[in-house]
Image (cartoon, rainbow, N blue to C red; front, side, top):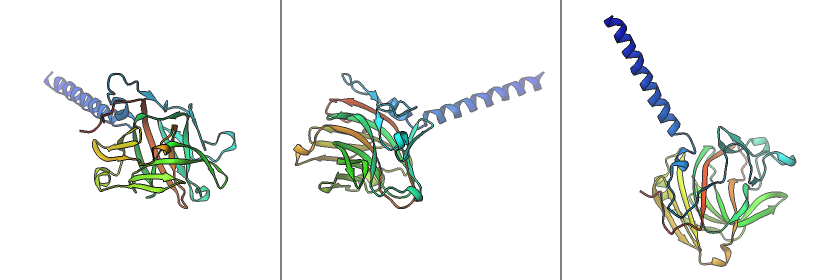
Length: 241
């Protein structure tokens, strides 16, 4: 009788342990952090990516005969190229809707190669060397070459002072972009790593959000998850510890 009771107790404890492990793994899935962020009262968070298809987006997804650089796997947007189809021009998966003042929380991971990626904002779809899904505007770069770039205009406009590189965990980075007026703030893994104002506010216009696959000559892969946005946000960071 005691033996049966001990076996039952062991089975129960094992079940509880496995359940706890499964819960921890589930809580750590890409996109879960973004979904857990509490936006301030008065802000309405909207999922830019539904986790299933590219509704609300346009770009090189293979549809309409386009080059297939962007796919979806396990609820994550994957931007990838092989050596045989390496892009000569950086291209972007773009929201069909333009945004001006917004807060964006998302998770990003560089899975292969050391080439940076980024989130393009405040610009427009741009054709370059027959690539119709490039971008002219601001780029918030990650996770290598942290900084801000002005695509097809001024080039580098802000270089990381070391805070972003220090906050980079070399895996899934949890990020918040707050773009208001001519000011861009970036938080990485709970740390404010950049606070920069553009001295040319006339270049800060409403535009689509773009996910970058950089031009390259080798296989590369970058992943995006979460992508939750609110418009006309309060002037405060919400993920900084």
